Image 1: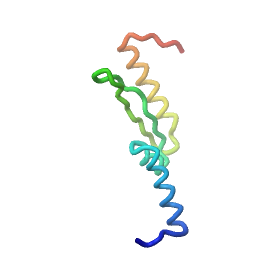
Image 2: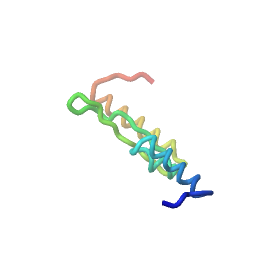
Image 3: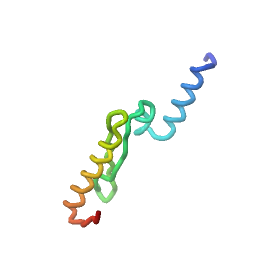
Image 4: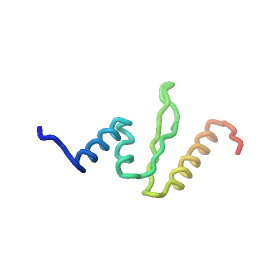
Length: 83
């Protein structure tokens, strides 16, 4: 296998490090899309996560969607949240 040098080494190293963080988030880390994961509920007593991904530079929409989902979910669970 040939050695990777220069800019290729930087890109290769970056992708390796980003992929190590987590397989679910790696594509968004590389592309720069804002993303977050929230608790979407439970299945058999275990938490289930939901990843919300937005357009580049649109973090506000991702946060607003997460906030709206949590309000709906907590309303269905009869949990009162204070603002």
